[in-house]
Length: 359
Image 1 (spheres, rainbow, N blue to C red):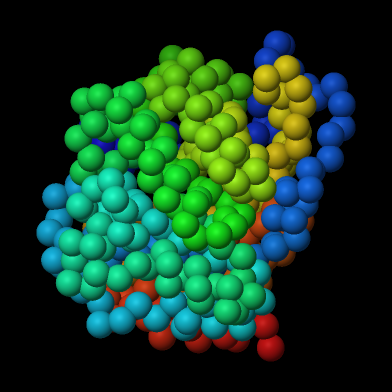
Image 2 (image 1 turned 120 degrees about the horizontal axis):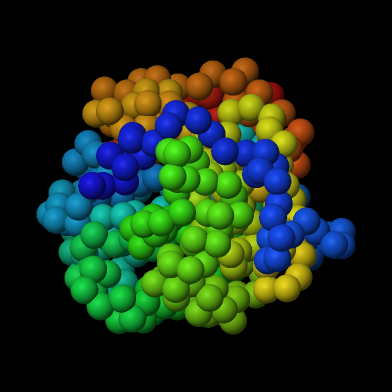
């Protein structure tokens, strides 16, 4: 069963972090009132960013793929990262987050650790490098998305310790070759997290139960403590996030520096202070949503992340401003996604909305 099938079988409800009473022990109520640290404050001041989903899926009209697509299909005539960043700047955004590797394992930079990347495509460029250069030209901070789940790399399935080494080597490239990174957005944790999702009666598990299950299973299998510490050694001011999926918005998968709120569409109570490793820590929230309002082949009915040729749906400026207001009331950042087309440019609909946001 893949994640889409698994999630489709879950009850159609959402979990708010503050709806669940904190239990004793590790996840007890905060005993102090910690403030955000300097790196968190700098990231929170960015407030509004552009999320870019662009990769091999773009060229095969897919949201997710299985790591077997031919890299030769990745063949944009250009990758207009200047246009992406110009749109972000005109929208009043302060940062941009690029998908460097989605679940399919295709890498948007010429990594030395797999041939499944832009270097095996006719394009043969470096999308990450281009985006970083454009972002700095337009005064935008840079964040990176990296999928833990990799459907192409064989060690992911057959040799977990070797796969962690593979990830760390790739993260060395991303964090060592492109300058400061303000956020590293990890995704795909569910592939090594079978437990903790539901209670015996079929309801979503309480936040503390889900986190404890993560610490007992997923965190161990991903060696996430080692990964986190490695990232912080490379770039201490890079905020690490780990997407707990839209079923557990705002729930931290420790260790992290900020929390994900995928497709949160209304003001919700939100717990800011969480206890981990015997201390309380402030963990800010980022809400992620997408300009597309149309699903693709039964996936993500509230809007696609990658571009699809039949999708001309788009949130209007008033809707985006409402999302900004929701984020502001929740003291959260808003990360708004646009999926560039196969020509390497943003959809005309996305460009129009983004450039009208900040008159």
